[in-house]
Image (cartoon, rainbow, N blue to C red; front, side, top):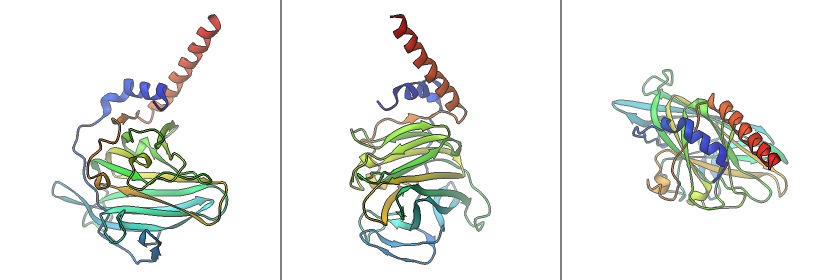
Length: 274
């Protein structure tokens, strides 16, 4: 079990928060923008920091649009989005790939924001989606370059699922959310070991911070990751993933951290008394 104390406390205090609502499928296949070029083995990419997608989902009789914004920081530069991405080049399947590049040694990454709008409003009227899942995949890394991403509780993150296998993506809490870290070696895009499924409820905007640290090797060194909004990568079959892990309310992290300290102190006192 990864971080057993925190996982146990989260289950005790917020387990009832998991929603049984039906998830809305999201597809990144209807977009506007000018193609910048083609990335070898990946396909066409678009360098504009902002991408606009129409009709990414339907909720009842409402069409939903999406605006995606990317900005790089630290030792990394943003290369581009790969909308309508497929794991087989030339056969788009509605995923959204992103690519950022280490231009020097050190830490950095990509700040990635997704905002939902009511369709037909020219991206002016925000729209709250009741529930949706995002499968973030190809988060692996290599010996001299790590890969990870952060998801934030205040964005409506309610649970996550990790591959039910050893040496897979790991999860740990930080002050504002959950850090998902790659295992540190190359893994196939279709391998759940390099993926995590995130479930969001009642939100119109989320942020994902992709990050890395490059300590060696030749430069520039690129990182590719992708987002699947309808679980088509695994054909809707999540049997290779563990059960959903509930996350606390944003304010609950302070309580969980404090409770963890109490448990540690109690254990030390018992050890001393023995």
